[in-house]
Length: 243
Image (cartoon, rainbow, N blue to C red; front, side, top):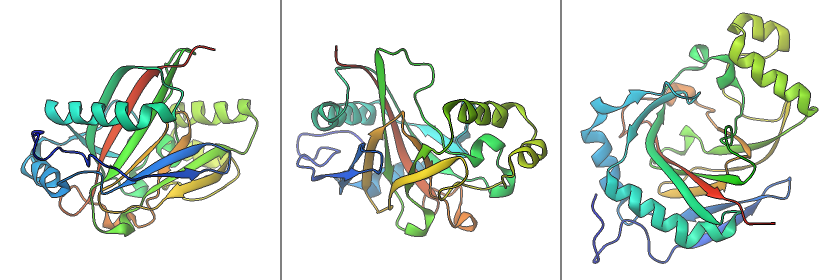
């Protein structure tokens, strides 16, 4: 997984498509983004025993940290091609990992029944961008959906707070929500767009935008990097542009 002058990890001439969401924001889709995506899947497969359950946020599955060389290549790609498209002046921190959604719907916690954003804990002077790279061929494993609140802010904040503190049955009864992955508009959120999965496709978006994996066929989920919903997830914390 080392970058070389002869064959860089990332496509040096990416074709970037802009996808307009219903709220006026845009996300960006890059197909054929890695020069050799099979090599990254093989790298993950050789380390399948090193994947660990996510215990630091609500991601419903397992993760594996990346080699330093790939971290640097992702950072370079973001700085060159993506940072100018967002309210992002200076990159302060990057975190990237390989991930696999593995949990069946009945095992999800209430917070995992909902969409989410990645901007918690940031100061007003910071922005965060996020990316997901699909490293699987079976498109039934699902892409990414984007959402906006359909209720007043205080109601959405209470919903998120209760999703963390309430037991599943109490949360289900109080909000009349069933366990499962979010796939469409509902009482609390409106779907504003989505990106279909494709082998070696990478999507960049504002991390403050509510989003969720489109897991419509959870029976296909697996912890096998060769068969499961293997993705490369990136998070880029930046300083906002001065007003």
